[in-house]
Image (cartoon, rainbow, N blue to C red; front, top):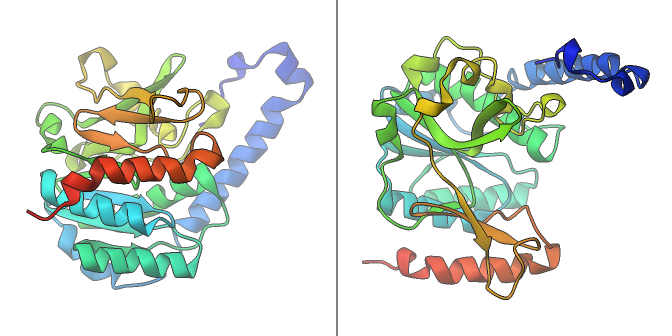
Length: 286
């Protein structure tokens, strides 16, 4: 959504930002329109669409982390109330994608390799969600659907769809000024409530919104945030002797978010070891 002209400062006008942002928006929109028309890189998408019809579906966007995917699939199967778990693989590397597929086959989730994207990071994530919405969710018409980050792990029983009995969507709310949106790593929707909306799961940095924020105009701006049940996310250091500013976890009820893409890179291996230790009792066979 283009930024309102009234929101630009004199400094923005002097730097020609109303024009440059408009051009960038047009370019990003053209890229999105091309991307959602691309075919999947593997598997029978028609069969996957049929399997989602009329069900409560969780969809994870994977990215080159087969260990996280293996853990999440097994934990969702153990703890989470849903009918089907689909992994949409956004991995760039073929070897990593093969490993993600193997994890899905072993742990019992549907696998679909998404089309290659020229974008990276959060822009690529937004394009992946738009592709899934356009090519999988809309034609499948599930009763309810939700998107997960691949490093978001349930550690106890939960029915994330239960909130949709009384509202059209549910998840972690993030705000930027007067606008807000559901974090793309945990957002759930009643399909009937959004079926005819022009959903757009991309970021909209020009108005301060991260991945999923481009849905502000389509759905969130119409809702009364004060009346919504929401998932309250808490943040804490991943280890007591590591400052939160250097690396952290996020937690919601029984869910643990590793936040693997944030924090000091030299702590990433140690952080994964801490996650493994925390999840080990939950992954043990009963």
